[in-house]
Image (cartoon, rainbow, N blue to C red; front, side, top):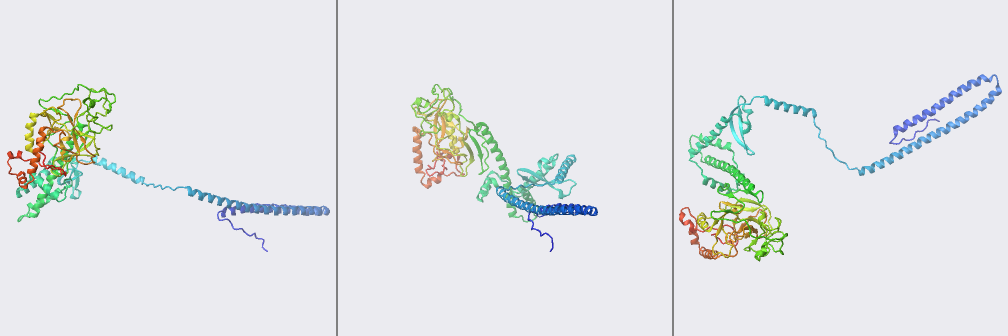
Length: 588
């Protein structure tokens, strides 16, 4: 039979390492066998030499060596079995360790959270070359002489910046570029010639068609655009197209195209509207900054007009307090003040000295009805500005927007924040004038169909109102607050440092919760809940006129027509446009 040893199947994980370990063990066993054979060879040789001399010794030695050889064979067999067993045990231990490692590895994989990392590779060499070329080009442009402008071909605006299409001298038209005005240096003559040629082209068209639009034409065209759904903020025109069409129209030799003429006229009107709109926005921005510079953010005021082209009022000056007129002195040194260190509704505060009620809640909201006099703490009081009875004098912290109304009421005011009921909103300030001066100005305002006069008729002991506040020229944001027969603001008389009964401050408080972006209004006809005799007579006459005006014939007679003489304007009453359900139809 063959003595070849049968091989065990190797472990899948340790094929090469186990085979190598086994070869080393086999080499070790083979070396032992070789050593044993060498020793046997030398022993046989010595035995043959001594055979002749001593046969007895030879036999004896032969027997002893045989015993030794048998023992060696037995030890070799035992060692071989031990080596084989060690190999088998090492394989088992290796397989066990591999399985244990695989189990631990799988457990660790379950606890691992994979994260994604994206690295954007950059060609460093390419980027360096690109930066170097860019730097070289920049230096080249700086060293190169300026290019000469041959002609300006067209003009447009990019983000509000005028940009011109330039034809460069000694360069083909394919190199024409759009350049901002800031890049066109040392060529004012070329710019002037370009603008002049465009104006001359428009003048030729106007002269040819007798088309000279005025403010009225622009207003009517603006209304026409509104009817078509175009807002003033979205009106645009391609100016280059206008000049191309004008050139085409002027070069027509025979019958002029009426359709093209109409298109050109509309485009010219659009261009005029855009120019006026640009000037308007500059005017409104300047006005807004001027008012906020005065108020220092108390209150914050924004200006908005998306209705028409009305600019900032030219004859209005923003003030924050009363301005004494001719013959008017406003005292500012109160004779008395409270001695409270911490004012509240139970202390003998300023409001209690006149047997009045505490006007404010702890949260500084008004708690008394309109017409109730309010006495705030003044400069002689011991309390500081944090006193809850110092509301009006701390100023308004509201955010307002003066906006252009869409129903013909001119400017109006809306709040940019929600206002809680009872909150102080603003003061009504202006020029304080005498009763005689108010009579003169009143006739002028009535003729113009407007009034900013507010009588200070809060003193019951006086038969006549000695002073009036005129906010027509001097005033604050209240100048632009419109009238409503169902207002959300009420007017209160407030005395602070001036305790003259005839000179109260006029404070506007919220009658109800006012939503954000809601217009704020007050009733022009209800200046005081306690009307004087003149006010009662005025209300009676208003009711009589209201009954008379119910018939349509009289209404038609009151309509303002272009042929109405100026002398008859005083007899025409001002229509109310508040739109409230309880509207009284007429203001004055």
